[in-house]
Amino acid sequence: MSTYSPKMISIITTGIATGTKLAEMRENGEFVQLTEREIIDDEMALIDALDVPGKSISLATSE
View 1 (cartoon, rainbow, N blue to C red):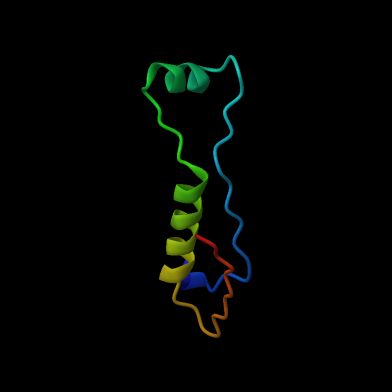
View 2 (view 1 turned 90 degrees about the horizontal axis):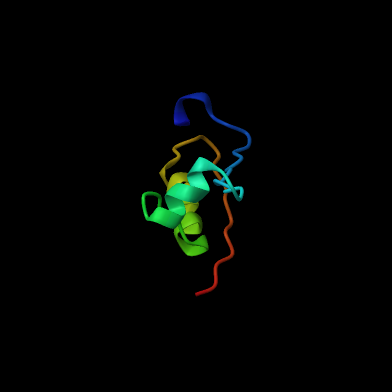
């Protein structure tokens, strides 16, 4: 992403609908969904890794 200097980044997480193959895989332990904290950590790591001119990012965190 750094190559194209994005003006905005949208991060979309996986939603699992009841009765789908993915829901079945989660129930069987074949798919492990990230926790909200893991998702936030991944998003912050992605933003932190961006190298774009004029990058100014403010993240409010609480632990």
